[in-house]
Length: 277
Length: 297
Image 1 (tube, rainbow over the protein chains, first blue to last red):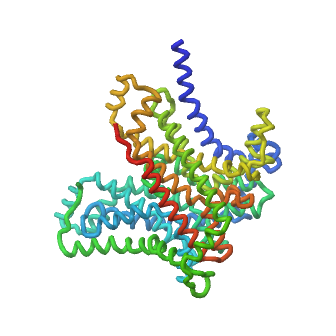
Image 2 (image 1 turned 45 degrees about the vertical axis):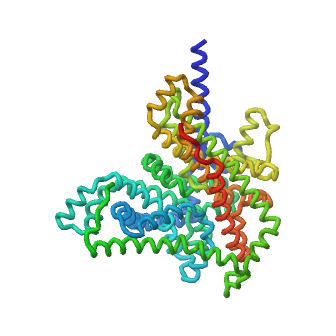
Image 3 (image 1 turned 180 degrees about the vertical axis):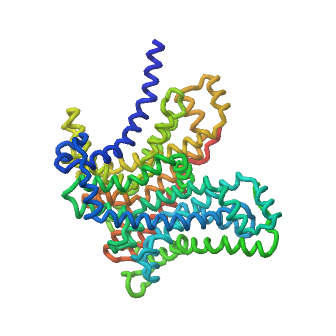
């Protein structure tokens, strides 16, 4: 009797979570195997495994549907944003963490408060601003905004990490005559490597997936990003479901790989970035 | 505290320059537009020429429009359902995660979190395939278990579509709140649980009477984040239904986009954007007030 009760309790705890886990993994797996089917095969039975692997969808998406261009643009935006966010947030995080000066708390509070702003409240004025400055619909339309959007989380991550690191090393460096800048970049930056990698991953995921600003600020086909590109596959290529599936899967591959290799950093970063919703 | 002293004037100048340049840039991109957004919401403006100040007329027109209330209703409905769904399920899951009976904890945690990092657009399209009435996974699953009577046009039936679109949104973010709650739970000292167990408080009783009060503040933050986050729901709906059928699944953010960039009515668009912000802030304050600060055990 006790054994039975134990078994029931085990099931009660394990089954719901396992079901949820399966539903979380299934869509990606399904995307992966469905994208190598032909349309005929797919419509016949959308659940079935493919009988043969067809890579035609990938080739079509890449060549005809200019997925290559979208990928290039997304990569371009991500890389530049990442590089600048890393430097700027490190400098801000370091100074906010190490020094106490007038206005420090105000800066801190404003950064914290802006994490709650829904980006939609900004989209109209930013659109107008960019139009006035003549950078609307160019390669630099999105990057400045992405940088600003990513700053608070990144700054807090770095600030938090530095709080746990003793200042001894820096004091020693300054006795040896190293200035603020030198201490910051040559001594502390390498030490912050673990948290910087979290910042990189988190920023990459946000920028790679960002949709709203990219949709509003870009109209030129040649500079649009992947999330925008994906919306085309339903309107322009409606005839092919598997083509859409292949492009959805391609859009997910980078994120999937990063998650597989760095899921600890991703989780840590997401928790700090959760304030952004 | 690991802080350093500012030694001389030169250092002070370097520090101010280094912090103020990026901070002013940040203000310019993220804070100034809030002000201009409010200003534009008080003007009649088509995006070209000079904006004409009209006071609160945009808001009056907006509140008189039936569609605005419909869209607001949709958004608030999604807010409620998604908050209860996401944070509620996440809470249950994190309770289960504390049980010794649960196996493969790390695996489950990693997998349940995965949808969070996926693009909302991808999630939206994938669920469109799940819901599709001809070749959708849901309907073919229902057929295969012999319940064809439950088959619906999930995304075309106005009476159920709003509930249908909330499912993917809930599903995607359970992991996020689970991780936040789990990290709060892991901060509770082990002795508290041990004492509770000695006193005979185990299982769900322990979760409700010990764990929940201990993580109440984090739980409250999750609710606020989730509610104000869902206020700006946009990407999912664009990918899932694009607001249809009719306006049945249109959100405030989509309505704002429509007014601004489809109708070219920038003043109105800004008024909707400001409303989103105001409602989000009011919601956050209301939740703060209702959930209060529960006495910790």
